[in-house]
Length: 263
Image 1: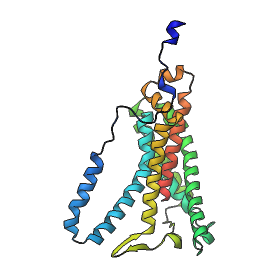
Image 2 (image 1 turned 90 degrees about the vertical axis):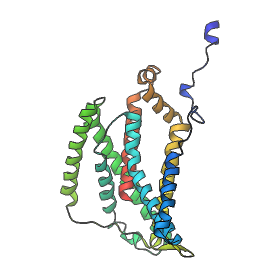
Image 3 (image 1 turned 120 degrees about the horizontal axis):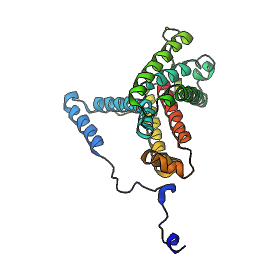
């Protein structure tokens, strides 16, 4: 009993306020800002430079939303899912399917109806892609778990299958997802004009980034996931079903790809 009382409780099951011993890597941010500043003399106009920088940031945020699920799955599950692009396409097609049902709200002059329609489209795209992601994980990822070569081959094949199914369901014709009136146009600050939708894309990207960081660093689920990556056997020995945790990572990762596709 004396020995047991002197054992320091393990922090493995308590959320950490910060990751000890790990410092934020500022080099990527510094490099990006440096390249942006180097482009200023080439462009020659500060307002144009600001407009183009905002557009590039918005596009980068949308790419981040699409790729965040892939990064999450590979970093936490060690799964090389080269079929991740299929989830982006599913989200885009699911979003376009709601254009006709929500057309009165999308074309309305009411900002509340416009925003409600956009939120509904984004949520449906995420849910539809998450459901497909769950099926994808059960059929293709689970049998190849732990074998990167099999994962590469089977996920590429699955992506081809999904692409053909999308063509069967929606056809090969171009489909449009028009912006509602509230999100059209630009905000003008002096000589600088920035599109409203690009600002929203940056905001959504920042929310996704903050949500992922908080989930992984400040919650019990995030802590268990990271612990499962480091020592799966120990987490299972503590009574946690690591398999369910990894599925809980894959499904939201697919949902984020669907959100990116809708955007």
